Length: 89
Image (cartoon, rainbow, N blue to C red; front, side, top):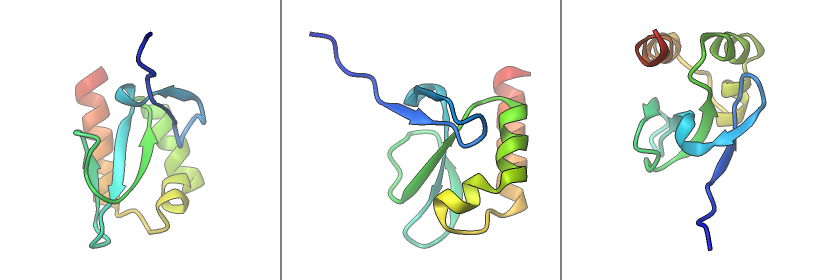
């Protein structure tokens, strides 16, 4: 029997994809927002496609803010943009 691959929804395009194909943004127990590349950091997580247009949609609609119930600092968006550029530059 094949192992079930976890699916998550992108906060930009709202498409469901394999968890490993997405970038996780996490609000830790201390309230700080950061990127989680291991997928195992403690706290509330939201996912986004590694595509610039998905990041723009999520930022404009404030879907990451709503999902994590916190205002996402601009530096987190900047770091996400840089990470997407590195992965798909």
